[in-house]
Length: 144
Image (cartoon, rainbow, N blue to C red):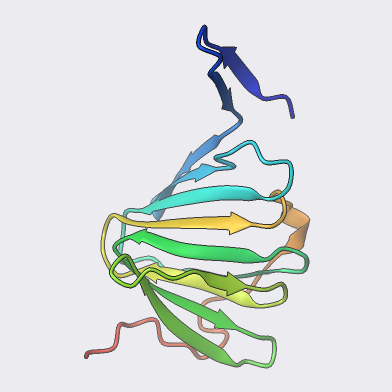
């Protein structure tokens, strides 16, 4: 894919092949930086009512960080093992999701922002989906 470029007099070059996508769950900027391998994506999550799950990749590794707000992130295996972790801007950390692991999230605050790096360019043939509830999971937030 050829990047759209605009050379400025100062030597600064604007490059964009970014894709914008919006639905009732989130606004997304996909392929933010012109990387030759992998891509950086950002999701601005509008709703705390949606569960964005489950999918896995056979080849791709995901790296997720919550830049604003908080998320309940889940992951599961074919064997049915399901685990959860909370990601938030108050306790920044990166979650590495290897190939073969189903994963998804639910925003706990409107306006939460998830940034994620994936090790391969988006390939729909590498993505496999499963139904919510397939792993007997509970997406509600625990009282603490």
